[in-house]
Image (spheres, rainbow, N blue to C red):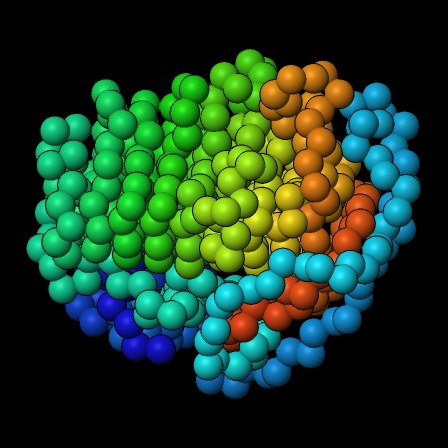
Length: 431
C-alpha cells in the first residue's frame, strides 16, 4: 500500500559506506545511503518512502511471499503452579464456551487473516490503525515540519490540530503533562531521542503517530495515555521505567488506552523494566462507554522484565500477534470483564508463569483496590489463531468468544523466527 505514514526518510537515515546493515534502510524517495545489504540480507520494498534490509535472498523477498495457513489450536490444559505468588490466579477449567459473547462492531472490506509469511514482518502500519471505518492513519503527513530539542518548543509544536510532523532531537525533560493535538506525527531522530519525566496525553484527538522515541521515568502516571481518541499508531519506541522494585503503583502504565478509544496499533516497541504495561479499559464499571470500542492491535513487541498487563483488557477487542514475552513475572495477557482477545504467533520465555488468562480475578500483583486477595471481575474471552509457543508458561481460557478473525490482512512472522526477528527489529534506531 502506498502511504505517507513513514516520514523519517531523510531525517532518520544513517549513511552507510558501501552496504547497509541488517534491518537498515536501503531505499526510498530521497534516500542517499547504501542501496545494497550485507551478506544474507536483501533490500525489500515497503512503500515509496522506505525499503529495508531483511533476511533472505532475492528469491525470498516480498515479491515472492507464500500464503500462510493458520492453525486451529483452541485449548491447552492449565497446570496448577506451586509458587506462592501464583496460587490466587489458578482456576481449574481451561476452555468453556458461552452463549453471550461480546460482539464486534467493526466492519471492513479487507481479506481476513494473515496473507503472507515474511522474514521480519512489515515496518508499515498494520492492524486497526490502518483498517477501520474512518480510514488509514496518516498522522501529520502533508503538514508543517519542525525539529525541537527543548520542552517549550516541543509543547508548542505538538498542541494544535493542524497537520504537522514534529522531529525530536535528543532527550527532552518534560516538566508537565503534554497534550498532543490531532493530525500529528512525533518522530525521534536517530537512536537516542525522546521524552522523560511526564506523560504524553492523547485526549479526545484523532490521527496520531509516535515513532522512534525513548519514553521513560514517569512516576505515578502513564508514559502515554490514550483517552477518548481514535486512530493512533505507537511504533518502534522504547518504553521503560526504573524496574519493579518499588511495587506496582510507584509508576503507572506504559501505554494505557481508555474511555472508548478505538482503532489503535502498538507495534515493534521495546517494553522493559516496568510493572504494569498496558491497560485497555480503565474500569470494570465503564461498560456503557467502552462496549463496542477499544479495538487495539499489538504486534511484534518485545516485553522484557515486566510484571502484568501485556496487555490487560476490558470490554474491547485486542488482536495480539507475533509478540515476544521474556520474564513477564506475574501475568502477561489478561482478558477480563467480557473483553475479547485473539492470540496468535506469540512466544513466551523465561520467568513467565502465566501467558494468558480469561479468569476475571485481578491478581494482587496487578494493583488490587481493596483486598490482598485481588479484585474479582467478570471473565473475559480468548481465541487462539496461529499456534503460539508457550514455553514453560501455562494459560487459562475459561471462555472462548466470537473474535476469531481480526477482519483485516496482516503479515504473520513464522513462529520459529519470532524471537530473533522481534529482538532485532524492535525499538529505536531501526527506522
